[in-house]
Length: 169
Image (tube, rainbow, N blue to C red):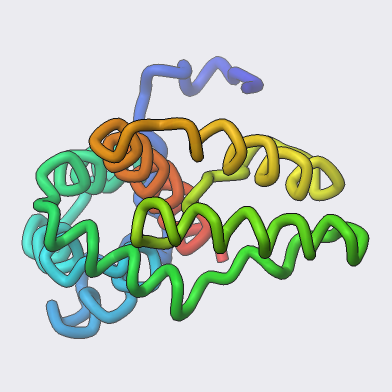
């Protein structure tokens, strides 16, 4: 991060036009937009209810807190939305890699009964397919309870990334 004399890394970013918009739209509209970031209606309602946010970091902190408070049913709801609206198939890779990923997803869903989530932020586009395959293979060895915890952490990370993208788009 480049620092300027006017701002240290510990000072909050300004609200920006997207956050200002999110802070002022009716709650129902905010919830619908937030549902694109996390498919739990309870999460979206909670994040919308705590507006206005002074800056991006405050929104992310509220999102994290709401994610940590998701019940099993809330997480299941969000996972169902992931399956319906956020396929991993848009990653670059060979047909063989896509076939391997589909097979790994099927094995994962058979074992755990829900969609496989992994946050691939920080990886270059050409690394994402390999990272997803490696992650699903490792996580297939998890116990069910441990995997729910890992999945909740991945959902939180994905939600943060989507909120950040939403505010920048």
